[in-house]
Length: 180
Figure 1 (spheres, rainbow, N blue to C red):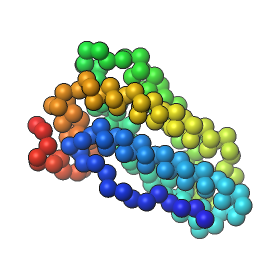
Figure 2 (figure 1 turned 180 degrees about the horizontal axis):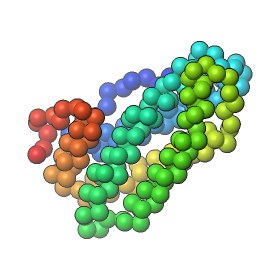
Figure 3 (figure 1 turned 180 degrees about the vertical axis):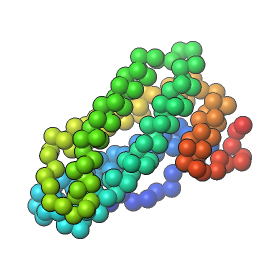
Figure 4 (figure 1 turned 45 degrees about the vertical axis):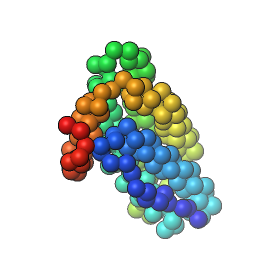
């Protein structure tokens, strides 16, 4: 049986760095679902569980996954670039990772879309592994290096602005008690 990720309360927009970390955890859970989907598909074919899992992965990476990349590329990285002591090489490496991850998603998405429709298609192990490995490695670096650097270098005003932009991107209300 494929267990789908459970919904957990995420940090609010007044703590955008924790929101990004929480999103990383959700991404890793989606990657785990993808692994289970691949194994289940091999043993059971494209049944209702495969369809449901594929639909969930698609929904996540087509919405929240895209917002996450925009949060980093349009708000977090530019804010960090303005800080003395920023590791610009790290930011460039992470941006390059985003391109690789997007290519891996573009290769995987059509297969998941067909599975979500109940069509019997082969999910190549190399395709799903490339996707999972690219995200896992990237998240490990962001959690270990990027987010701690951001917590150290960004001012409370910069953090509040990032949170406000993240909320706007999602059409959500920024908490009134939050900075700015």
